[in-house]
Length: 157
Image 1 (tube, rainbow, N blue to C red):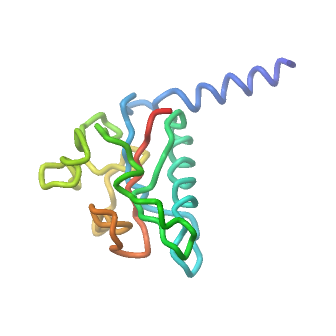
Image 2: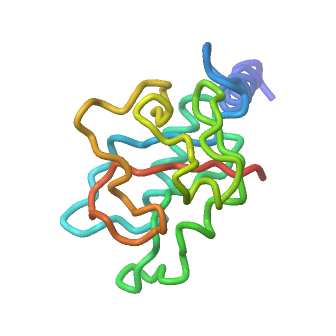
Image 3: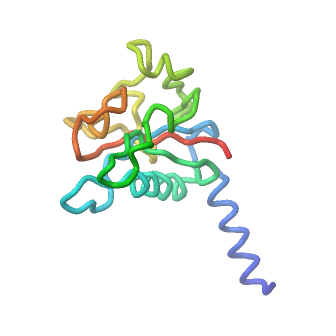
């Protein structure tokens, strides 16, 4: 392999494996405030998953498999995709390493740590004032709105 190829390969490995300054190595949760252009219909779950992954990859979290917290619909051929079942068992940590929830039961209860201070974007920024979260799905994965923002959860492997 030519030197340029090795340099590119090394840069890709560093980009996908290294947390950014101030970012916790345990980060596996963020809020995707802005989504791609979805068109007139609600996005397919797989398109939203890809958007979560793309955002995470650009911020050094590409080593995880990312899932948006949405239920699939029969309209998109994704009726078997259940939000709660897609995100793993926990625990989940934000950009700063603050635990959002230890497990599914805590995440779906009043005991979770989802607040304006803890629900950070992939860039470690708070969700802009006035943005209501989650609007992608209710905590049970049911419909809340057809627009983002969305919760993104990363799974190992």
